[in-house]
Length: 160
Image (cartoon, rainbow, N blue to C red; front, side):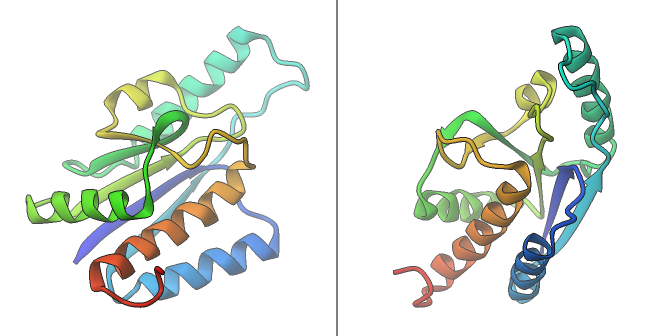
C-alpha cells in the first residue's frame, strides 16, 4: 500500500479545516496509508527582513528534511510549480507506483512558502493555482486532490 507523508509547516487550529482533513484522511484509508506531520512555523516579527525570512525558511527546511522518508518521491507545493489537471496528477501517481514507488512526501510550507533547497530536491513542484490561498486551505485542497487521483485511477464516479 502506498505511504503518503503530508509534511506541513504550521498547525491547523480551525475546526472546519480539521474536519475536512479528517474526512479525506478517512476516505483515503482504502487506497493509501496517510500520515500528516505538522511542524512548527518559525516565529517572525510583523515586518521581517529578507534575511529573517531566509533564516526561518532554512530552519523549516531542516525540519522538513528530517521528516521525508528515504526513497520517497518528493512533491513540493509552491506557487511557481507546475499546474496539472487532476487526471495528470492521477497518471503521475500511477506511473510512480508502477515504477516501484511506495512512498510519497508532499511538502507544504508556512506563510512564506518553502525554502529553495526543498523545491530544488523535489521530484515534482506542484502548484494548486496561480491564486494565493492560505497554507491551511492548501492542505485540504491537496488531500482532496489525492483522494480524487485515487478515484480517477479506480474509475469511480467521484470525478466527473
